[in-house]
Amino acid sequence: MISVENVSFHYTEGGEVLHDVSLKIENGEFVAIMGENGAGKTTLVKMFNGLLKPTAGKVLVDGVNTTQKSVAQLSRDVGLIFQNPDHQLFAETVSEELSFSLRNFGFGSDVIERRVASLTHALDLDRYLSSSPFVLSGGERKRVALAAVLVWDPKHVVMDEPTIGQDYLQKDRLRQFIVQLVSQGKTVVIVTHDVEFVAECKPRVVLLSRGKVIGDGPAANILTDSSLVEKASLVMPQISSLMKSLEDISPPAGLIDAYSARDFLTPRLRGIAGAQRVLQSR
Amino acid sequence: MALRVLRGYCKVGENELSLKFVEGFKFTKIDSPIHRLDPRSKFILTLGFFSVALMFTNIYALLVTFIIQIPAVLLARSVSRWLRSMRGGLFLGFFIFIMNVIFGTPIASSLAFTTRFFAIMSAFSFFFMTTSADDLGLALEEIHVPYSISFTFTTAVRLVPTMAIDAQTVVDAQRSRGLELDKGNFLKRIRNYIPILIPLIISAIRRSVELAEALESRAFGATEKRTSIVSLRMRGADYLVILATAAGLALATYVYLYVQLPTLAIPFEMPRLF
Image 1 (cartoon, helix red, strand yellow):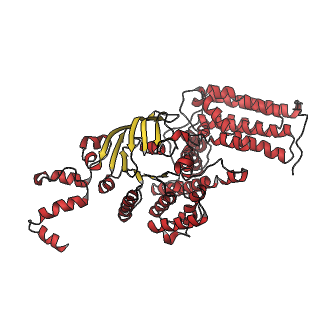
Image 2 (cartoon, chains in turn brown, cyan):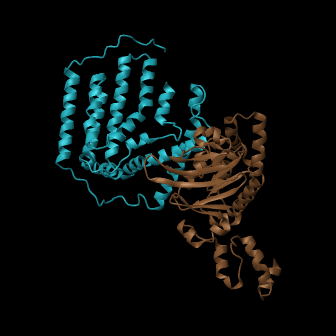
Image 3 (cartoon, chains in turn brown, blue):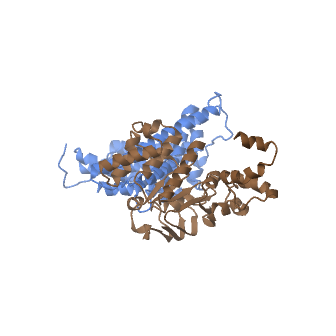
């Protein structure tokens, strides 16, 4: 469990970035941390693996205060994937890039080989194993950066803006991959502005604004609360806006994703001429 | 010892690898007599310090060149940032000293070369702390440096803090992958910096390519003759600084040619390794 208790933080120069933030993330939970630019999202997750230490309050990872352990020790359990893959890729080949952290953590060569093969397969990177990461496209580099962290199988996975630079297909794959990680019992925390992605994934949403938690709950509740969403400089998911305009047919509250919207709308459209033809053609 | 200094240089603390010494080369807008000076007069003053530092190999003369800059830094109200840059230079200073000693330079001369490094570093830190990139660009244009060159130079100056932020992020990213910079023997510790340097160089190259494309897309260099809304004007204080620099240079040259300076006597020498 990741437990943030009354955490405040300010950089050496500048004002307070986090103010009295408290939240608990259970093992195996899927959480999206959202909020406006400069809300303190990245600062908060950098505390999970000890890169930053709170100036007040404490962060406990599985009961251990992050001030008591080094970043390397904490990273063994908390895998943090940075927003920009170019900030971490350096090796000559994708294979070496993935082996780097495993070597740092002292894994044997047979384990390294097995894990690299398994991760590159899971993230559709097999064909790039001997390619330089620098010749890959932005989206592919992002997947290499993701694989380079997941390869050591951390208990808690934290992703900073994982959807940036990904096309729709890759985003959907990422969503499925996250669901898979959560089903394996991993804690997944994503930092994102991507409302539509969150609406499709439906995790617990922690909304930050100006360094404070202003909302915490299921995505369906948080992302449909117009005042909260506005406060965090976000917009409601498109499906929520559509459902709001269809109030006459009483859509259920908290309907935020396309799949639920399809299930709700399909039977109601059956009786409408024209729509019947469209539905039949599918 | 070398690594302790290196760690101090990069300040790999519990929280972060701090590259705050870059602050010592970053312009901050402050209302001070030095900040108000014309960039050309400040550049001449800096060149004066630089020339004197190069002229002498005597440690006392070099110490004076270093110390004489302190009033100017005080007048610029930038002491803490200047000190930060000096602390940042400790690793290189130590490296210069050690390499000289290893290759057989007498200890007194090695100390003098290290002092020279700090005198030069201090002069440029003083210049960049008190001169904005815009003023610097204007000054270069006024002395007829082609715009493409002055622009490249000022852009490089502007990008230093950005590069420092990038470096910090790269270090954070690699530490999150289990990299421990201070682990292993001396060579291993040097090698530990490869995963930091490569992403930094690659992202700098990517950034420069993107910047060049963005500039060309915005018609950079489309016209030969550029005009400027702001033009630089030398004032009394600027002429005074230039005069003082010329007088200082003349005095330094006289001392160099005609005055026998005392030398630092160190009773022992390191055995020559190479």
